[in-house]
Length: 57
Image (cartoon, rainbow, N blue to C red; front, side, top):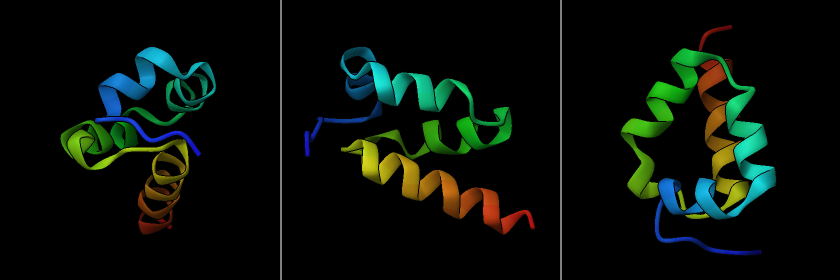
């Protein structure tokens, strides 16, 4: 698994992560961006996004 310095670096390098992120609801993207320094892998991105989306259920 690739690890990145932060969300910005990951989205710039990892096409798959960028595609996933761009399909998320806007409010979820905003919350992830706020904590972007804590996101270091695509697995972390997906786990955090899932957690945020389930909070709204």
